[in-house]
Image 1: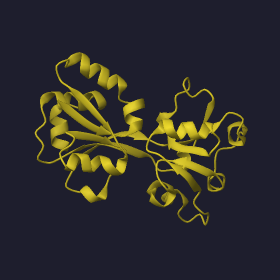
Image 2: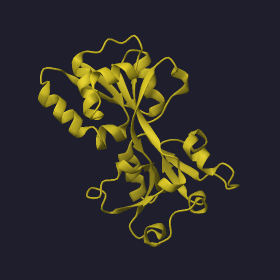
Image 3: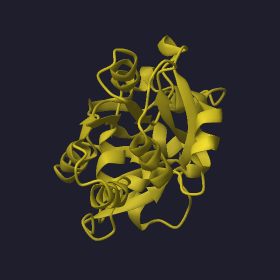
Image 4: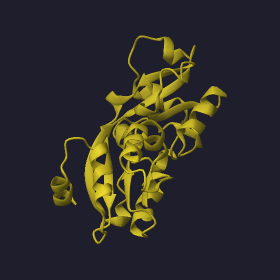
Length: 212
């Protein structure tokens, strides 16, 4: 069995082709995905509940874990069609963001990327009215009119989310990266490395072992 902890966003929007290919190549290996919040994922690896993880953040509480920097990602706003931000030509600015009611992964005071974006601006952080680690829940409440979604841009599906508009916020935030997270004393079978290579095409097993 191979157990991988990851975020809901990665599990839903990034990993499907990797998982599909892995199951085709290793039909006898039981694959388990453990979607969780980024603040929980590293603990699942540290406690041995997951063989490795694909996380979107680095948890400073687990410095003993080994990490490979993987894929870049950034943020966007999801707004209903017809929202003022969806129809204007100018790029989103911090003043716009500060005035919004936000639905996001975590509270503003726990979101280091959001704090960094507003540092030195003199503007208050936006009000976060609802939090969820699940992007589908965020989208549900954007559709319900509760607030505007602030989430990973890769979570937007132009077909499934045709009733929503993705407004880029990448110019307001520093790029973030996902990381492959492994315990230093873990013994990983060959198929675990194969999964990592499916997620990070072009990397050899030797390069992964050296990085870890």
